[in-house]
Amino acid sequence: MTDERRGRPAPPKLAAGSKGSVVVERCQACDSPDLVSVLFLGFLPPVNTMPPVGSRPEQQPMYPAQVLRCRHCELVQLGLIVYPTVLFPPSFPYTSGTTKILRENFADLRAEVEALYPLGRDALVVDIGSNDGTLLGNFLAAGYRVHGIEPTEAGKIAREAGVPTLTAFFDRTAADTVVRESGRAQVITATNVFAHMEDIHSVIDAVLSLLADDGLFITESHYLLSLVETLQYDTIYHEHLRHYSLTSLRHLLAMHDLEVVHARRIPTHGGSIRVYAARRGRYPVRDSVAPVLEREARELTEDALAGFRRRVVQAKLELLALLRTLRADGARIYGIGAPSRASTLINYVGLDDGILDCVLEIPGSYKIGKYVPGTLIPVFAEARLYTDQPEYALLLSWHIADELMPKLRANGFKGRFVLPLPVPRVSDGSGG
Ligand SMILES: [Zn+2]
Image 1 (tube, protein in one colour):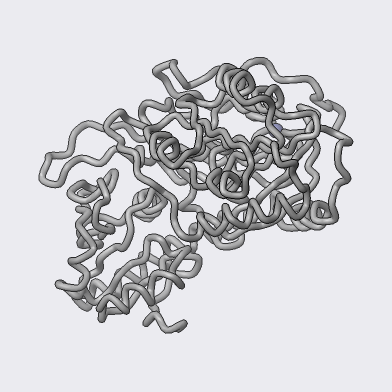
Image 2: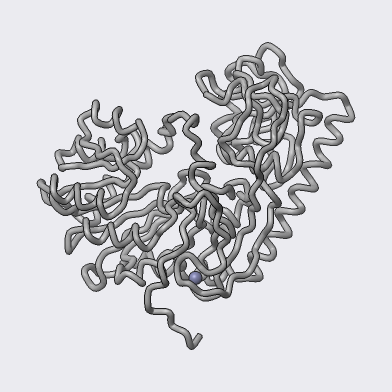
Protein backbone atom coordinates (compact mmCIF):
# COMPACT_ATOMS: atom_id res chain seq x y z
CA MET A 1 0.00 0.00 0.00
CA THR A 2 1.62 3.23 -1.12
CA ASP A 3 -0.75 5.65 0.55
CA GLU A 4 0.20 5.57 4.21
CA ARG A 5 -2.54 8.01 5.30
CA ARG A 6 -0.52 8.97 8.32
CA GLY A 7 -2.22 12.35 8.41
CA ARG A 8 -5.55 12.92 10.06
CA PRO A 9 -8.62 12.82 7.86
CA ALA A 10 -10.57 15.99 7.31
CA PRO A 11 -13.22 16.59 10.00
CA PRO A 12 -16.05 14.18 9.19
CA LYS A 13 -19.51 15.24 8.18
CA LEU A 14 -21.45 14.54 11.36
CA ALA A 15 -24.94 13.19 11.74
CA ALA A 16 -25.20 14.67 15.26
CA GLY A 17 -27.12 17.93 15.15
CA SER A 18 -27.61 17.73 11.40
CA LYS A 19 -31.17 16.33 11.27
CA GLY A 20 -30.03 13.89 8.60
CA SER A 21 -28.26 10.57 8.46
CA VAL A 22 -24.82 10.38 6.92
CA VAL A 23 -23.76 7.77 4.37
CA VAL A 24 -20.26 6.50 5.13
CA GLU A 25 -18.31 7.08 1.90
CA ARG A 26 -14.86 7.01 3.50
CA CYS A 27 -13.50 4.98 6.42
CA GLN A 28 -14.37 6.55 9.77
CA ALA A 29 -10.85 5.82 11.03
CA CYS A 30 -8.37 6.21 8.17
CA ASP A 31 -10.43 8.12 5.57
CA SER A 32 -9.81 5.54 2.83
CA PRO A 33 -12.58 5.33 0.19
CA ASP A 34 -11.78 1.65 -0.32
CA LEU A 35 -14.77 0.20 1.54
CA VAL A 36 -16.24 -3.17 0.57
CA SER A 37 -19.61 -4.55 1.61
CA VAL A 38 -19.50 -7.46 4.07
CA LEU A 39 -23.21 -7.91 4.64
CA PHE A 40 -26.50 -6.11 4.02
CA LEU A 41 -29.26 -6.87 6.49
CA GLY A 42 -31.80 -4.75 4.65
CA PHE A 43 -33.59 -1.75 6.10
CA LEU A 44 -34.14 -1.91 9.85
CA PRO A 45 -36.40 0.22 12.08
CA PRO A 46 -34.79 2.19 14.93
CA VAL A 47 -34.66 -0.18 17.91
CA ASN A 48 -36.05 2.28 20.44
CA THR A 49 -39.15 3.22 18.45
CA MET A 50 -41.80 0.96 19.96
CA PRO A 51 -45.45 2.00 19.52
CA PRO A 52 -47.95 0.98 22.22
CA VAL A 53 -49.88 -2.26 21.75
CA GLY A 54 -53.26 -1.53 20.17
CA SER A 55 -52.10 1.54 18.24
CA ARG A 56 -52.40 1.51 14.48
CA PRO A 57 -49.09 1.34 12.59
CA GLU A 58 -47.93 4.79 11.58
CA GLN A 59 -45.50 6.03 9.00
CA GLN A 60 -42.04 5.23 10.28
CA PRO A 61 -38.50 5.43 8.91
CA MET A 62 -36.26 2.43 8.27
CA TYR A 63 -32.50 2.67 7.88
CA PRO A 64 -30.18 0.54 5.78
CA ALA A 65 -27.95 -1.82 7.77
CA GLN A 66 -24.97 -2.42 5.54
CA VAL A 67 -21.70 -3.52 7.08
CA LEU A 68 -18.55 -2.33 5.35
CA ARG A 69 -14.91 -3.28 5.73
CA CYS A 70 -12.07 -0.86 5.05
CA ARG A 71 -9.42 -2.50 2.89
CA HIS A 72 -6.76 -0.15 4.27
CA CYS A 73 -7.12 -0.35 8.08
CA GLU A 74 -9.58 -3.30 8.25
CA LEU A 75 -12.13 -1.36 10.30
CA VAL A 76 -15.58 -2.94 10.02
CA GLN A 77 -18.24 -0.24 10.21
CA LEU A 78 -21.86 0.52 9.43
CA GLY A 79 -22.52 2.19 6.11
CA LEU A 80 -24.93 4.74 7.57
CA ILE A 81 -24.71 6.96 10.62
CA VAL A 82 -28.23 7.66 11.82
CA TYR A 83 -28.72 10.95 13.63
CA PRO A 84 -28.73 10.35 17.38
CA THR A 85 -32.14 11.82 18.22
CA VAL A 86 -33.73 8.99 16.19
CA LEU A 87 -31.72 6.35 18.03
CA PHE A 88 -32.20 7.88 21.47
CA PRO A 89 -35.60 9.59 21.40
CA PRO A 90 -36.44 11.83 24.38
CA SER A 91 -39.09 9.27 25.39
CA PHE A 92 -36.40 6.61 25.70
CA PRO A 93 -36.02 6.01 29.43
CA TYR A 94 -32.80 5.14 31.17
CA THR A 95 -32.61 1.50 32.18
CA SER A 96 -29.74 0.06 34.12
CA GLY A 97 -27.83 -2.46 32.08
CA THR A 98 -25.60 -3.60 34.92
CA THR A 99 -25.96 -7.37 34.94
CA LYS A 100 -24.08 -9.92 37.02
CA ILE A 101 -21.67 -10.68 34.19
CA LEU A 102 -20.91 -6.94 33.84
CA ARG A 103 -20.34 -6.50 37.57
CA GLU A 104 -17.94 -9.45 37.60
CA ASN A 105 -16.19 -8.06 34.55
CA PHE A 106 -15.65 -4.66 36.22
CA ALA A 107 -14.22 -6.32 39.33
CA ASP A 108 -11.93 -8.34 37.07
CA LEU A 109 -10.84 -5.16 35.28
CA ARG A 110 -9.68 -3.53 38.52
CA ALA A 111 -7.84 -6.69 39.57
CA GLU A 112 -6.10 -6.88 36.20
CA VAL A 113 -5.04 -3.21 36.27
CA GLU A 114 -3.63 -3.59 39.78
CA ALA A 115 -1.75 -6.76 38.85
CA LEU A 116 -0.26 -5.50 35.58
CA TYR A 117 0.16 -1.76 36.17
CA PRO A 118 0.11 -1.05 39.93
CA LEU A 119 -1.38 2.37 40.66
CA GLY A 120 -0.22 4.95 43.20
CA ARG A 121 -2.63 5.56 46.06
CA ASP A 122 -3.62 9.00 44.75
CA ALA A 123 -4.17 7.77 41.18
CA LEU A 124 -7.23 9.10 39.37
CA VAL A 125 -9.45 6.71 37.39
CA VAL A 126 -11.92 8.23 34.89
CA ASP A 127 -14.71 6.28 33.19
CA ILE A 128 -16.25 7.55 29.95
CA GLY A 129 -19.95 6.70 29.82
CA SER A 130 -19.81 5.79 33.49
CA ASN A 131 -23.49 4.83 33.71
CA ASP A 132 -24.55 4.15 37.32
CA GLY A 133 -20.94 4.14 38.55
CA THR A 134 -20.54 0.37 38.90
CA LEU A 135 -17.13 0.23 37.23
CA LEU A 136 -15.72 3.16 39.21
CA GLY A 137 -17.22 1.85 42.44
CA ASN A 138 -14.62 -0.95 42.30
CA PHE A 139 -11.74 1.51 42.16
CA LEU A 140 -13.34 3.79 44.78
CA ALA A 141 -13.66 0.87 47.19
CA ALA A 142 -9.93 0.20 46.79
CA GLY A 143 -9.12 3.79 47.80
CA TYR A 144 -8.39 5.41 44.43
CA ARG A 145 -9.78 8.74 43.30
CA VAL A 146 -12.47 8.40 40.62
CA HIS A 147 -14.45 10.62 38.27
CA GLY A 148 -17.27 9.57 35.96
CA ILE A 149 -18.61 11.24 32.84
CA GLU A 150 -22.15 10.28 31.90
CA PRO A 151 -24.77 12.08 29.79
CA THR A 152 -27.87 10.34 31.18
CA GLU A 153 -29.78 10.42 34.45
CA ALA A 154 -27.84 7.32 35.53
CA GLY A 155 -25.12 9.66 36.81
CA LYS A 156 -27.41 10.56 39.68
CA ILE A 157 -27.31 6.98 40.96
CA ALA A 158 -23.51 7.10 40.76
CA ARG A 159 -23.29 10.38 42.69
CA GLU A 160 -25.54 8.98 45.41
CA ALA A 161 -23.09 6.07 45.69
CA GLY A 162 -20.23 8.53 46.20
CA VAL A 163 -18.85 8.47 42.65
CA PRO A 164 -18.26 12.08 41.46
CA THR A 165 -19.92 12.22 38.04
CA LEU A 166 -20.05 14.97 35.45
CA THR A 167 -23.30 15.07 33.49
CA ALA A 168 -22.05 15.48 29.92
CA PHE A 169 -21.26 13.76 26.67
CA PHE A 170 -17.54 13.05 26.55
CA ASP A 171 -15.68 15.67 24.55
CA ARG A 172 -12.79 18.10 24.98
CA THR A 173 -14.85 20.41 27.20
CA ALA A 174 -15.81 17.54 29.52
CA ALA A 175 -12.18 16.38 29.62
CA ASP A 176 -11.00 19.90 30.54
CA THR A 177 -13.59 20.08 33.32
CA VAL A 178 -12.36 16.82 34.86
CA VAL A 179 -8.72 17.97 34.62
CA ARG A 180 -9.64 21.23 36.42
CA GLU A 181 -11.53 19.43 39.17
CA SER A 182 -9.43 16.29 39.66
CA GLY A 183 -6.25 16.54 37.60
CA ARG A 184 -5.13 14.17 34.84
CA ALA A 185 -6.05 10.52 34.86
CA GLN A 186 -3.77 7.52 35.42
CA VAL A 187 -6.44 5.29 33.93
CA ILE A 188 -9.24 6.16 31.51
CA THR A 189 -11.79 3.45 30.79
CA ALA A 190 -14.38 3.31 28.01
CA THR A 191 -16.44 0.14 28.17
CA ASN A 192 -19.05 -0.56 25.51
CA VAL A 193 -19.14 3.09 24.37
CA PHE A 194 -16.14 3.39 22.09
CA ALA A 195 -17.94 1.79 19.14
CA HIS A 196 -20.96 4.08 19.56
CA MET A 197 -19.30 7.52 19.48
CA GLU A 198 -19.51 9.29 16.19
CA ASP A 199 -16.52 11.64 15.86
CA ILE A 200 -13.95 9.11 17.01
CA HIS A 201 -10.83 11.20 16.34
CA SER A 202 -12.11 14.08 18.48
CA VAL A 203 -12.92 11.57 21.22
CA ILE A 204 -9.35 10.23 21.21
CA ASP A 205 -7.97 13.79 21.22
CA ALA A 206 -10.05 14.49 24.30
CA VAL A 207 -8.79 11.27 25.91
CA LEU A 208 -5.20 12.39 25.29
CA SER A 209 -5.81 15.78 26.91
CA LEU A 210 -7.11 14.05 30.02
CA LEU A 211 -4.58 11.19 30.21
CA ALA A 212 -1.43 11.48 32.38
CA ASP A 213 1.83 11.09 30.45
CA ASP A 214 2.24 7.54 31.76
CA GLY A 215 -1.52 6.86 31.87
CA LEU A 216 -3.44 3.95 30.39
CA PHE A 217 -6.45 4.15 28.11
CA ILE A 218 -8.52 0.96 28.41
CA THR A 219 -11.38 0.16 26.05
CA GLU A 220 -13.79 -2.74 26.01
CA SER A 221 -15.75 -3.28 22.81
CA HIS A 222 -17.83 -6.03 21.30
CA TYR A 223 -15.27 -8.07 19.38
CA LEU A 224 -15.46 -8.65 15.64
CA LEU A 225 -13.94 -12.12 15.85
CA SER A 226 -16.62 -13.21 18.37
CA LEU A 227 -19.27 -11.77 16.08
CA VAL A 228 -17.94 -13.79 13.14
CA GLU A 229 -17.26 -16.99 15.09
CA THR A 230 -20.68 -17.26 16.69
CA LEU A 231 -22.65 -15.54 13.95
CA GLN A 232 -23.81 -12.64 16.11
CA TYR A 233 -25.14 -10.61 13.19
CA ASP A 234 -27.93 -9.55 15.55
CA THR A 235 -25.47 -7.19 17.29
CA ILE A 236 -25.52 -5.15 14.09
CA TYR A 237 -27.83 -2.19 14.61
CA HIS A 238 -27.50 1.51 14.17
CA GLU A 239 -26.07 2.37 17.61
CA HIS A 240 -23.04 0.18 16.84
CA LEU A 241 -21.15 2.31 14.36
CA ARG A 242 -18.04 0.13 14.39
CA HIS A 243 -17.16 -3.50 15.10
CA TYR A 244 -13.53 -3.48 16.20
CA SER A 245 -10.84 -6.05 15.77
CA LEU A 246 -7.56 -5.50 17.58
CA THR A 247 -5.99 -4.85 14.18
CA SER A 248 -8.34 -2.01 13.28
CA LEU A 249 -8.35 -0.54 16.79
CA ARG A 250 -4.56 -0.61 16.93
CA HIS A 251 -4.43 1.24 13.62
CA LEU A 252 -6.87 3.89 14.85
CA LEU A 253 -5.01 4.45 18.13
CA ALA A 254 -1.66 4.58 16.32
CA MET A 255 -2.93 7.56 14.32
CA HIS A 256 -2.83 9.37 17.69
CA ASP A 257 0.52 7.91 18.79
CA LEU A 258 -1.17 5.56 21.19
CA GLU A 259 0.29 2.06 21.33
CA VAL A 260 -1.59 -1.11 22.25
CA VAL A 261 0.33 -2.69 25.14
CA HIS A 262 -2.04 -5.43 26.27
CA ALA A 263 -5.19 -7.14 24.96
CA ARG A 264 -7.49 -9.84 26.22
CA ARG A 265 -10.79 -11.39 25.16
CA ILE A 266 -13.54 -11.11 27.79
CA PRO A 267 -17.02 -12.70 27.94
CA THR A 268 -19.27 -9.60 28.12
CA HIS A 269 -21.98 -9.00 25.49
CA GLY A 270 -21.39 -12.39 23.86
CA GLY A 271 -17.66 -11.78 23.37
CA SER A 272 -15.69 -8.54 23.77
CA ILE A 273 -12.08 -7.45 23.71
CA ARG A 274 -10.32 -5.41 26.40
CA VAL A 275 -7.47 -3.32 25.03
CA TYR A 276 -4.86 -1.33 26.97
CA ALA A 277 -3.15 1.55 25.18
CA ALA A 278 -0.50 4.05 26.31
CA ARG A 279 1.59 6.77 24.74
CA ARG A 280 4.05 5.16 22.33
CA GLY A 281 7.15 3.70 23.97
CA ARG A 282 5.89 4.26 27.53
CA TYR A 283 5.38 0.57 28.39
CA PRO A 284 6.63 -2.68 26.85
CA VAL A 285 4.13 -4.38 24.53
CA ARG A 286 3.01 -7.53 26.31
CA ASP A 287 3.07 -11.02 24.80
CA SER A 288 -0.75 -10.98 24.79
CA VAL A 289 -0.89 -8.70 21.73
CA ALA A 290 0.88 -10.57 18.92
CA PRO A 291 -1.14 -13.83 19.06
CA VAL A 292 -4.41 -11.90 18.79
CA LEU A 293 -3.16 -10.00 15.75
CA GLU A 294 -1.88 -13.21 14.15
CA ARG A 295 -5.18 -14.97 14.66
CA GLU A 296 -7.11 -12.03 13.20
CA ALA A 297 -4.82 -12.04 10.15
CA ARG A 298 -5.89 -15.64 9.54
CA GLU A 299 -9.55 -15.49 10.54
CA LEU A 300 -10.77 -12.02 9.56
CA THR A 301 -9.74 -11.97 5.93
CA GLU A 302 -12.08 -10.81 3.19
CA ASP A 303 -12.68 -14.49 2.34
CA ALA A 304 -13.53 -15.29 5.96
CA LEU A 305 -16.05 -12.45 6.01
CA ALA A 306 -17.60 -13.72 2.78
CA GLY A 307 -18.00 -17.07 4.55
CA PHE A 308 -19.60 -15.26 7.49
CA ARG A 309 -22.16 -13.74 5.15
CA ARG A 310 -23.03 -17.15 3.66
CA ARG A 311 -23.51 -18.58 7.15
CA VAL A 312 -25.76 -15.66 8.16
CA VAL A 313 -28.03 -16.26 5.17
CA GLN A 314 -28.05 -20.01 5.83
CA ALA A 315 -29.00 -19.45 9.49
CA LYS A 316 -31.92 -17.26 8.40
CA LEU A 317 -33.24 -19.93 6.04
CA GLU A 318 -32.77 -22.68 8.63
CA LEU A 319 -34.58 -20.72 11.34
CA LEU A 320 -37.54 -20.10 9.03
CA ALA A 321 -37.61 -23.78 8.07
CA LEU A 322 -37.51 -24.83 11.72
CA LEU A 323 -40.28 -22.43 12.73
CA ARG A 324 -42.35 -23.55 9.76
CA THR A 325 -42.40 -27.15 10.99
CA LEU A 326 -43.25 -26.05 14.54
CA ARG A 327 -46.08 -23.80 13.38
CA ALA A 328 -47.41 -26.51 11.04
CA ASP A 329 -48.05 -28.63 14.14
CA GLY A 330 -50.00 -25.75 15.65
CA ALA A 331 -47.41 -24.94 18.30
CA ARG A 332 -47.35 -21.60 20.06
CA ILE A 333 -43.96 -19.85 19.99
CA TYR A 334 -43.14 -17.06 22.44
CA GLY A 335 -39.97 -15.00 22.13
CA ILE A 336 -37.92 -14.43 25.29
CA GLY A 337 -36.17 -11.07 25.81
CA ALA A 338 -36.54 -7.91 23.75
CA PRO A 339 -33.04 -6.42 23.73
CA SER A 340 -31.91 -4.34 20.75
CA ARG A 341 -30.43 -7.42 19.13
CA ALA A 342 -33.88 -9.08 19.08
CA SER A 343 -35.11 -6.31 16.81
CA THR A 344 -32.36 -6.99 14.28
CA LEU A 345 -32.97 -10.74 14.29
CA ILE A 346 -36.77 -10.44 14.03
CA ASN A 347 -36.65 -7.87 11.24
CA TYR A 348 -33.87 -9.50 9.24
CA VAL A 349 -35.38 -12.99 9.40
CA GLY A 350 -38.85 -11.53 8.81
CA LEU A 351 -40.65 -12.88 11.87
CA ASP A 352 -44.13 -11.41 12.39
CA ASP A 353 -47.08 -11.82 14.73
CA GLY A 354 -48.26 -14.84 12.74
CA ILE A 355 -45.02 -16.66 13.60
CA LEU A 356 -44.20 -15.35 17.07
CA ASP A 357 -47.24 -14.92 19.33
CA CYS A 358 -45.46 -12.43 21.56
CA VAL A 359 -42.13 -11.56 23.14
CA LEU A 360 -41.72 -11.62 26.92
CA GLU A 361 -39.66 -9.25 29.03
CA ILE A 362 -38.68 -9.20 32.69
CA PRO A 363 -41.08 -7.25 34.93
CA GLY A 364 -40.34 -3.54 35.05
CA SER A 365 -39.09 -3.31 31.47
CA TYR A 366 -40.39 -0.20 29.70
CA LYS A 367 -40.82 -2.36 26.57
CA ILE A 368 -43.80 -4.19 28.07
CA GLY A 369 -47.05 -3.11 26.38
CA LYS A 370 -45.24 -2.02 23.20
CA TYR A 371 -44.71 -3.63 19.81
CA VAL A 372 -41.35 -5.05 18.75
CA PRO A 373 -39.92 -2.44 16.32
CA GLY A 374 -41.15 -2.88 12.76
CA THR A 375 -43.77 -5.52 13.72
CA LEU A 376 -47.08 -6.06 15.47
CA ILE A 377 -45.54 -8.60 17.84
CA PRO A 378 -46.57 -7.47 21.34
CA VAL A 379 -44.18 -7.43 24.30
CA PHE A 380 -45.68 -8.82 27.52
CA ALA A 381 -44.37 -9.52 31.02
CA GLU A 382 -42.54 -12.81 31.53
CA ALA A 383 -45.22 -14.23 33.87
CA ARG A 384 -47.22 -15.30 30.79
CA LEU A 385 -44.64 -17.95 30.02
CA TYR A 386 -45.67 -19.86 33.14
CA THR A 387 -49.43 -19.31 32.92
CA ASP A 388 -49.76 -19.92 29.15
CA GLN A 389 -47.07 -22.64 28.90
CA PRO A 390 -46.44 -22.26 25.14
CA GLU A 391 -44.91 -25.29 23.44
CA TYR A 392 -41.77 -23.33 22.46
CA ALA A 393 -39.75 -20.40 23.79
CA LEU A 394 -37.51 -18.71 21.20
CA LEU A 395 -34.46 -17.36 23.02
CA LEU A 396 -33.71 -13.95 21.53
CA SER A 397 -30.90 -13.50 24.08
CA TRP A 398 -29.44 -16.75 22.81
CA HIS A 399 -25.89 -15.67 23.64
CA ILE A 400 -26.73 -16.23 27.32
CA ALA A 401 -28.84 -19.36 26.70
CA ASP A 402 -26.79 -21.45 29.16
CA GLU A 403 -27.71 -19.01 31.92
CA LEU A 404 -31.29 -18.48 30.75
CA MET A 405 -32.62 -22.00 30.14
CA PRO A 406 -32.06 -23.39 33.67
CA LYS A 407 -33.58 -20.19 35.11
CA LEU A 408 -36.77 -20.41 33.02
CA ARG A 409 -37.00 -24.11 33.76
CA ALA A 410 -36.57 -23.55 37.51
CA ASN A 411 -39.33 -20.91 37.35
CA GLY A 412 -41.71 -23.54 35.95
CA PHE A 413 -41.58 -23.39 32.13
CA LYS A 414 -42.43 -26.86 30.77
CA GLY A 415 -42.03 -26.35 26.99
CA ARG A 416 -38.96 -26.58 24.80
CA PHE A 417 -36.45 -23.97 23.75
CA VAL A 418 -35.60 -22.74 20.27
CA LEU A 419 -32.10 -21.31 19.82
CA PRO A 420 -32.01 -19.10 16.71
CA LEU A 421 -28.20 -18.86 16.40
CA PRO A 422 -25.48 -19.80 15.61
CA VAL A 423 -27.22 -22.97 14.37
CA PRO A 424 -31.03 -22.85 14.70
CA ARG A 425 -32.16 -25.80 16.81
CA VAL A 426 -34.61 -27.04 19.42
CA SER A 427 -33.28 -27.82 22.89
CA ASP A 428 -34.84 -29.23 26.05
CA GLY A 429 -32.43 -27.06 28.03
CA SER A 430 -30.36 -29.88 29.50
CA GLY A 431 -27.39 -29.25 27.26
CA GLY A 432 -29.06 -31.10 24.36
ZN1 LIG B 1 -9.86 2.48 7.29
